[in-house]
Length: 118
Image (cartoon, rainbow, N blue to C red):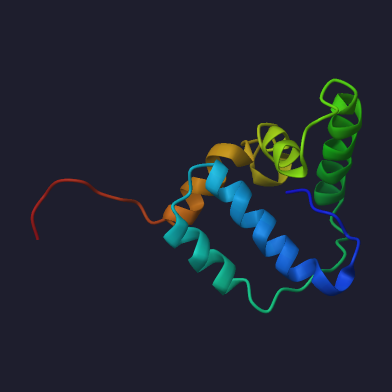
């Protein structure tokens, strides 16, 4: 997700609001979004030394830069949704767009067995 880092005093509420908008646009139910935002509290930001994470972040930056001229009126939410369509190595080359809603619906990744009686 893309958000601005200006006005650091309001970064946490802005991040939470923007994340909520992106997840909603991805089709995540409001109840699951609220649960995720609540479980993220307190929210911390930090650096990573992971080459895989850094490489993916650099890939996203390049995709963003290369596409800016083609979509000058896009919002940060639009850009977040655009980038969520790109395969990402830290998540096994899956795309965040379908993966995020799936994980939020089943955060422990339990295997759901349908049918059968107890």
